[in-house]
Amino acid sequence: MNKFQSRSFNRSLMFALNGVRLAFRSQRNFRKHLVIAFLTFAIAYFLKISVVEFCIIIFANAFVLVIEMINSVVEFVIDAYYKNKWAKLAKLAKDIGAGAVLVSACTSALISLLIFGSKIYEFYYSL
Image (cartoon, rainbow, N blue to C red; front, top):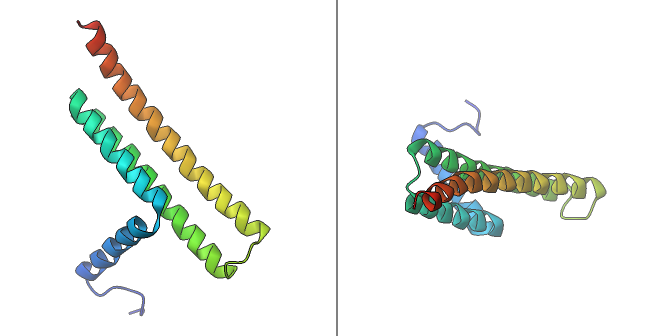
């Protein structure tokens, strides 16, 4: 067995939870996206959206958090490779990673606005 392979599911789970904890503690934008996710869940609950719509919102928010974590991994690897020195290729890679987070966040916001907007529209015109 490879020294980097986990011997049990519980150990693998602990490593994964440690990764989420590290992302939460070290990445300011991850924390911001998490707060926004909980706000969208609260709005979804208040607007009484359907289960399918709620699942879509959960998926969209989780997608942003996953892309943010992948972007952090890329940044850490690049910093380690370039020993925290500036390099044009490092900057390009980091900018593209940040762009991926931006695209996922904008997509998530659009999904939420469409779902919430339709519920607000229905409520307003049903009066």
